[in-house]
Length: 587
Image (cartoon, rainbow, N blue to C red):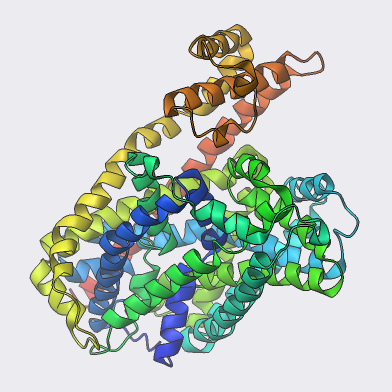
């Protein structure tokens, strides 16, 4: 039995910490963009369905798994899963619950440090008088380390802050941070949402009312609702926004008392995350951007995700409000993102600390500083070689593939091997609410099928990523531009009879009268034409770009090797811990 005596100080603190774990940067930067790209208001239908069939059931499962492990003194997934089934395999499946948190923290803390840096720049007036292009270029220079001391210092400070809070323990550090961070996040979010929807056309340079952005975001396009990619996007958004499959929920839940409610706690954390995402997340970024830039430009900018709007555009738009309001808006936006980030990154430290405390008798302070040191070492390549895709590679393998893999296996273990009968009894034990019995059926059949669909549908993409298919295609087109030209005219041939003004319109996505097939051909043609024009320019150095892509492949392969090595090291120490247990007669 573990001598780990950590615990939660209050139920409110636990729920806020759990909600903070789920509420992250994706609630404000990813969700609005996903909605725009997948049918606007129609996206909310598959989103809510997936929340009920995937999100809530999985929260029940992971809370139950965590509390069950905590009853036997286990606070990390290798031995939590081992407690559910004694076959040796499960300890090593549980390695994912430590590996994912370490690997994600390695790049997430760097992303988190950007928000802290931009809080400072908002106060210091760095963006005063800058054009939109200059503000956007500033972000590019920042991540490219054009002036390396500043990004590195903010990253180190952010990492130190996370480690220091973790060293104070669960109730003395993580819980206190959640009690401060989550209310401030909601306060900042409410202020920005109010400012966004109250924007009036003509005031401070706004082109449209802020409500036009909400209308644009939620205007249903029901012709897209039955497209598989929309449902896959909704399932993916639910999966990642709730931090399912990371191992942090199980760790947090392992510290609750054996008869404490988990069903209502899980529901509370899940619905709070949903409120932040759907109500606040959709009421800030897009309404402000549409109000000042117009729908066409926002559509174009969201093709590259939410970072462009969040870091490259909003600082410029806040400057239009002027004076104290503009400064406070910048502090509120990036402060909101910082609190969303740090409450998530703190959760990533607890499974690692729980493992060290349980299996090797470490004190929480020492375990926290080791976690910080490991994140420093693992995170350094994501800072120094950001341009070569190391950051994205960590995110793909640790923040996507690892999560889905672990969650899919976990739901099979809970519902079919541990058994739904015992699992359901664990969910409802001590519950303050009556959990609808239909969730028992959903957890056993629907959730595994839905997650299995997400898992298997993503496999072709995993294979393509392993082969560096996209990067090799770029190299081929650079080496053989005639191939690019042939593809370009191939798409043009499919557009016979379409007016050239439509074909060459950069905002063709707004032409709802076009069929999806025609729209796809036009956007592909435009993309290929732009690329062909770029690489055909006399000043373009083709050999230099080919060399850059080859270096990218090299650095990505090194990143994969580093992540694989990390997984194997963790597996080794899990094996060592198991041997220690055997020697002590604990197994």
